[in-house]
Length: 244
Length: 236
Image 1 (cartoon, rainbow over the protein chains, first blue to last red):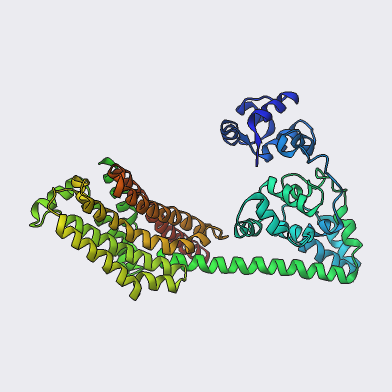
Image 2: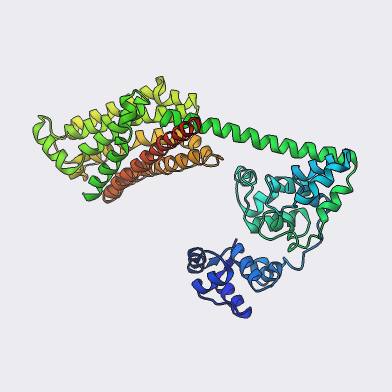
């Protein structure tokens, strides 16, 4: 769900941003056509609100919370659960930690080029949902947002869910409402209230067994992705050869 | 009238891209199906239809021939799409025993109805006489076969929409829209049984559906050509 264009324009006037599509697009650094189309349609998508908030130095969560659709967002922003933090650790990060524990020189060698990337990460949504799942999150989420479970699965596989659905998933999981938005890449981890270095801290405090499990899980996920890519590639080849 | 010609020109342009490959014996069935669909739509353009039908001894026989050619084109295209998506069951339902029975049943019923109502004025789809319920059944039944093929292929093509490969996604989306329109055309045909005025909207939907299917097949063609060129460049 997006926010109402009229409410968005009202908010723009409170933060001294232009309400016209073209000057606004220039001020917030987004495509003019995108902004104009959304204003004309009467609904403005969340990334536009976030971009506008960042442009004027307002916290995106604060900006989103001013709209009815996200009124609870700011109030229910909490620090992330440790399991959520772990869900956003990539295969590369986990592997580097594993190697570093085997031989500290690896850590020294890689330190200058190591970057903790913000989400969205490959298969990051699935990892987060699995981490915060109280046991029925997919079924309940599909019911609440009114879509068929296979369609929800397809969205999770594609690593793309609507911001409103991400908030709803967080609500079902009883975690910070901003976590889903961060995992989905709508806002950054810092904007979602995740402490600086949360992932590094979580990773370095993992037991050897838990670290091995994490690497194994990420490797399995990467293997799923690689298999899917190979299957899709073979299918594309077959389609092109038969119909082309 | 102009839309009819436009549809034929677009379909012909897409079919012509196939000629060089077909001459080399590559995917002849798809090329034949493209040619058949172009011929079928070409035959029902007003001037061609009028001139050919004037020469024929049986009034409106050109319409029946166009339908036979169209069904054959769809049979070939449907078979190849099912093969492309590795769907042997669907392929059997299109060109196996079941498929052949459906094809013949629809066409034989069309011939029987045609025999009864064919001399009610010379017009594509006997559309001059839509006030006759039997003519409306004749017209609607002709949309049932494309809808049958589209309905069988739709679930497979739908899966392709979420492919990580751009060419599969693009091919799938064009075919998906084309098949949805083919089914919508049949639904409109059913409406025509009770509201003859909707017939002309249905004819435009048929043409647009054909264009989308042709675009889907053309996308697969250009994707293959592009891949081969890239492979050649790498090799050189």
